[in-house]
Length: 523
Image (tube, rainbow, N blue to C red; front, top):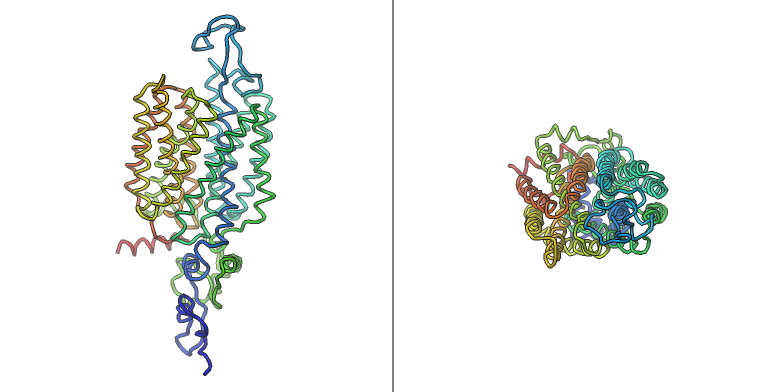
């Protein structure tokens, strides 16, 4: 007996798909349409060989962001100094010209080269704040561009090119103000690196694997910081340090970018259905799976499966801006909360990272320990993410960091208490590092594809505003920074209570799909 059409050698998910494709009227076969999450789950694979390769390649960009961001810890450090012929007071500003000198040469840091001490010490915090101001602007610009015509991959390519150029030019800065301007421009391009890399790495991952994958992207950022401490130890001239930390961005462009794919979700919302399906077929083939014949993609607001699929092919691209986010009551409150939480957490994270200069311990070792402390935080949150949920885990890690920062503000900074304060800072970094990458996942899940990078861009901009404030807090020295960081962590945890839980919820594509999906949850 001949096998019935659509039923030969099929089982499991393929049999279900075949049943769905069966026509209702004359026994004919119609095209089946489904969303990307469903197609990944049923047919292409949620996290197979294709996603692993793509994830590893794309997430390498996070290490580049770490190099461009944290290089300031070493380039703008205040080296040791000594008195010429008399006992030294605690502050070189109490001495006259010629009565003291730097232990290293003039190329050791920008502080030595341009005399950023005493009355000019504020310029250290100023240039660091200018970098984060550039990050804030760049996050908004490239967040929008990656949602629109440039796409995720195109935006990532552009920011890496700009990082290479601006970083190399920074190494040739003849004056402080040119240096400050170039650091601002480097921040502008750096602000889009992690944002584009995170979305590009996680959008092709299936819903049940996306949380753990998203948490893992930040291993690359911490690895970049750990690598930087070794690079800075080997290249102690600040100009050489900028050259060495800029060249990896160029290598990424030529050695990695050609081998990564554009997001199928971006193709879909741009109505480029053929390219989106090509990516889905590549995912399925690499994962040892197969997409059934007649299967195609739909947006999550296309609820009528009997609609002619040609409408998706020839329709206008679905787009959205931050204005659409603000117009919707559902997303407006989410945006306000994520902006506030990102701001507060960024003050803590970057503040603790930069505050190592106030601990009076070995700078290279302190930076390395902070980077290493972040890694178990990522592992812990990756394991607990799908058990506890986004909100409980976020609140817990924020409060963990806040409590230890408060303790750090109450202990002294001399003798054995100096070690206690360093431990408090390390635990604070542990908690806030876990929070920081969780916020990326949480924010991405709170907003649909058409505005995801725009919303992430706003949250990242808020984070950069916090980062702008962080160096200015650090210059107060002693226990004040720890007290500020502790309060910020505790308040951020309180605000997180007002966000909805997103665990095991779909990645919506459109604003309409999000509204309809949330209304069903309420019902």
